[in-house]
Amino acid sequence: MRTQILVEAIRAGLPRRGRLLMAAALIATPLMAMTPAISFADNGVPDYVQLVKQASPWVVNISSVSNPKTQEAFNNGEMPTFPPGPAGDMFRHFFQEQMPQMKREPIRSLGSGFIISADGYILTNAHVVNGADKITVRLPDQQTYKAKVIGKDKRTDIALLKIDAKNLPVAPIGNSDNIQVGEWVLAIGEPFGLDHTATHGIVSALGRDLPDESYVPFIQTDAPVNPGNSGGPLINANGKVIGINSQIYTKSGGFMGISFAIPINVAMNVVDQIKSTGHVTRGYLGVLIQPVTYDLAQSFGLDTTKGALVAKVEPNTPAAKAGLKSGDIILKFNGSEIKHSGELPIMVGMSPIGKPATLTLMRDGKQMELNVTIEKLDKKALEAESGTSEAIEKMGLQVTELSPDELQQLNIKYGIKVKSVKNDSQFASVIAPGDILLEVNRMPMKSATDLKKALDSAPKDRPIAIRLLRDGQPLFMAVQLGTQ
Picture: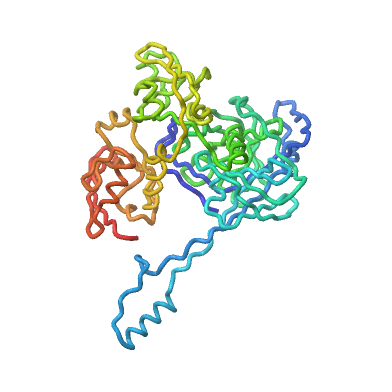
């Protein structure tokens, strides 16, 4: 089973040294047939026996196989030069026939999904099927089907699959907007390959804002979830799916009492768009936001931590055109209260393109309103965030920009934070997660775009200098950017 590790502190107050682990997992699917009311024991605990019986028919196993491209035996993919004559021919034959390529074994992954329509649509996590060349779905009765990816959305980690089947049991879909902290939940999945494992817990918190997941206000639970559970359903006491298990917080690779699920309303919005248009379109505001902490609320003269604090306004964006400023605290979007900052991207993303929206905000202690026209989140708007970051990730790095508050706390004018470094990357021996890159090849690092420019223009025949901040101490490191 593969896992994806995000080495980044959770902005919602978890320890910075903790890690998030996204695990390929088994997704469980609920039944859409008439669901009888769930009975409760005298102590108020749901009848989990009945819940599991109802959920089992719609839980499916998802296995995927990825066939990595063979890697050339030589770093540059070219044969070495051999001298002419019989000796050269002999060596050439040896390298071509005996060592043509370094073969890599197929990558196999287990996950889960749940059936959302009787004709074979299945919902799962995008990371369960990312890069898969072959996807197989196994139903509870052990029938297997080849699955096709109808569409997937990296930003919400949602994938919609389709199998050629009819009259399937269907998951009853709940309303994640009605979830309350403290209510009972059930998770079904395949932790460590253990088929159809059921665990339970409660909703611990709502609207968690995790790194790289700005379009998902996660549901936090204490239901035991381990590698193999990702994509499985989170079910409420009424037997309805209210979330999709996606990530866990861990230092060991296993469950530590904190797991995160994607709200089902977010997932179904993605499904509806994929079914109707084949892709997901989102609204775009053009701001970098952060949560309003207690201390920040005090400093801004607020008596609540609700809202989203604007850390940066991108130029030539809807926010800039509307007059939004850094330091504004957005309290409402189109009249809907923003209880926590993670709600704003969802609201904006789901807004009609080209339509006006009203922002209610606090500026300099005074409440005011601004009208903004939401634009489409297109490739141009995503350039620094998507295309640039993808190019950097190919080199084994993940980075994120620093907010003005973070820059002030570190007493620096610019810098970008390293989120993760691949073990096989040429940077692995010199850069560590948590490092702040200040300069690369003498170029100041203010954004991911700056890093890409520095790496693209760096010489390949000699090491380049990297100035960074590690544990508050400035350091110079050198790295060779030759072809891997």
